[in-house]
Length: 140
Image (cartoon, rainbow, N blue to C red; front, side, top):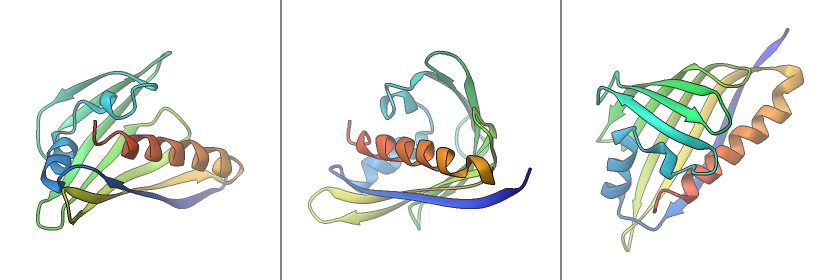
């Protein structure tokens, strides 16, 4: 099975102050608020870099993730998926924020991963939809 490395990015303007959005992201828990139709519950073990997040999917399945980097100066955080629910490999998620005027900020969500060539299109669509849903709910 041949794999290809993919980078999928979504970006959105969030109607909240950058500091508030930053706190939501680095908290690394409560992801069910951002993707409520997909996520049943989230259990967080630890905090800060090294924290483990187990996300339980509605209808069965779970995802184990580790927070790997927090850079307050760059408003960037990174995490990896240790047990993906779909056939992706070496997944890394990166959030980057850019404060805007009027209590708004731009948030970029990048996913870098490997996927089998024959599954690339389907997986890219699933990940893109997840990113867009996540970003659209950050102001909730």
